[in-house]
Length: 616
Image 1 (spheres, rainbow, N blue to C red):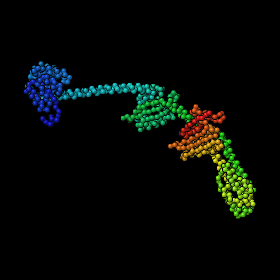
Image 2 (image 1 turned 30 degrees about the vertical axis):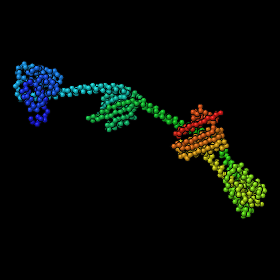
Image 3 (image 1 turned 90 degrees about the vertical axis):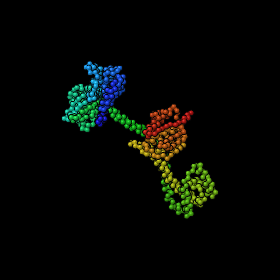
Image 4 (image 1 turned 120 degrees about the vertical axis):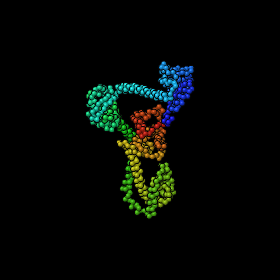
């Protein structure tokens, strides 16, 4: 046995013969050729062995005890497992009828005993080759049948898909289309769905026959952009998306096209895409755009109206304050006027007498006189009327002890000058012959200094009121946020309300050091004005008002607490509603707290009410 024989896998051969010599001989012959031999000497064993081993070829003796070879062959061919195994009969019978019967029961060949080894090998190899070819052919047939079945399945699926595609294309509102752009620039529409009827008013067949029917509908102003976008997509083989107008039956429509070009082997471009009528969408966009413009204009008007309301409310509050503000300005102006009159009188009547007066004094008297002036001018202490009466009484008693006549009058003058301690040093002046002239001159010089101080203080007070009034009435037309100190704005409003609070309201301030706030200061001033004004009205300008400014984490909390009667529970939810007021007719517009809430909302803040009602 050569190497090729050992390397090549050989077939399995079942030998069935009751003659052991023949069985051994055939086994030896076939084994030497590399076949796998399965020897069996009984018919029953032959059937079971064929089922289990499924050999590639069976050599079957005809004349056997029990079941003969013909019957064994019949049973093999009747069995689904073994019916395809080829059977070669072995027999000493050489009659033609015997051979015919062998072929009739399913045999494929007949070897007569005694047999030759070469003949057996040739017949075995021939039938094994035929068997192998038959198996290969069967496999090819099976594969072909599978391919045919698969192709039929794919064709049916493709047919169903095409049917669904055409049904879908026929029913969707978008116009499905396929067309080819050839290298020479000509175009050919291959397919158009039925939606073209609604968009162009044309039948699909008409567009397929003449693509210019739809090309000619492009709105003239959109033609250039349409062609450029299409050329760019063709050059880059990129998805194409474009919106343009078409003119159909004298009406302008908006359409949107989407397609993807695919280059073919011949250089042409195959386009597969869709076209939609977006006229209603464009009209809706236009309506929405117009609506947005109208809303923007309305919002601008509302902002302007809100600013006007805020300014009007501010002016209304200013009108309520005007009497008090006028008093706050007139009072320091009156003080200034009186002080100026006193200074003028001094300049006219006393100034020219000063040289003569000082020359009339001795050196000691001059020193005492200057010391008296210095003490009077340095004394900044202010006493109440009751305390001043006590000081005058004590000083008059001291002067009387020194024998000074008219002690009460001199005591009054000295206390007004601010001189009431260490009076012993000035006894020589007060007992001098010209004591009345000396005391009168000292009083006038001190009054001159007091007049200048009065003018300074009154000017500062008037300036503060004017500044507060200016800050309060300020209107910012630009409406930009700036950083301001919250407490300064509150103090500005309190300055304007000083005249209304100074006689009956106890004002308590609790201000923490808080950082500046980015805000609209004139609007916040309106908030403080409304809240302070409401508090004063709630108390009838009699009671206590507490204002606190604190910082809690990243927020600033401002609270206004008054000692008024409070707000009834049933109307607490209404106080921020526009035009709602609890004041008598003519005393309130009902917009104050509504404006306050809008301003606070604009500053992304929050306003809350806490009230403990105590109505009679």
